[in-house]
Length: 360
Ligand code: PMP
Image (cartoon, rainbow, N blue to C red):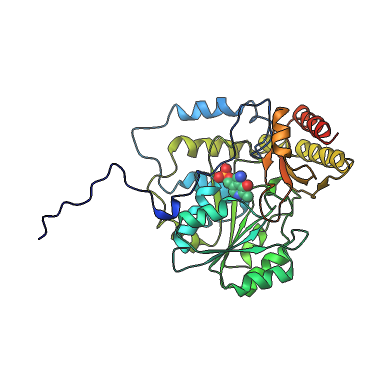
């Protein structure tokens, strides 16, 4: 055996593929008008936290929570018209997506996701050591038959599609999802984080009967106004739910969260009552933007709008005026674009005023 000392260092370098990585996240800046993370501006209904408080006082927090969170899954399944074996929850839909990649991805597998699309997809693929290909949507950012052909040609194991698309706002049609399923052998993951803001028939959930490899991903963070709760879920065939349990951490969903989610579902009607107000505000802001010279705005079925202007540093210039939006202006295909979340009427007016001021 060698007596040579091993090399000693003060720190262990991070995984090489993470060396240049910045932690993901939109800037959380303390400015008067924050319209950058697609939260809902209205708080949960007034009766919600008192009802949660009443329920959590009887929790046995010295015990681990119900690992398969049965009561929550049953409540979700009842709402969706599914069996509890087809539903699975986690800490935000981001964790759901990560669990899917951990279960079905990996170095020998391949993901295809659309561009533009949710900017966490590449991050999640990297974390899960899964090679990924980006496939461009068409010039109008639609998932056309040609786009499906390009995706199918990559022979993916998983396809990730946000519907409505973030950051564009457009929903993906059922036929496009059917085509993706028919022309690949992939798990087709439709990420419906914003679907409750759109038409009642916008969801692809009804296709679960027909498409065996379809996974629908949802969240409480957006229309359910509970971004602070960190709760998301999937609906799929029962084998998907069995497979993600191979990678979930034991007791990943804490007891307080399970009960809080249940109370939210019990109060669903009150929770979702704001959607028409959001849609009306969105349409008002979109109409105002269309009046402005040189501003392009995409049709949106979500609680945000994507717009393109000729102003190079729009993000910074809005920020100087106390309005925080999401900057996409240096992203491929989104050059010159920012995304603005629909806030309260006052916040939306503050945004429009700041924008008119910049454009003047
Ligand atoms: N999918 C999409 C398309 C999103 O925009 C977001 C949040 N920005 C998520 C998933 C993740 O949301 P959460 O983890 O809060 O459920």
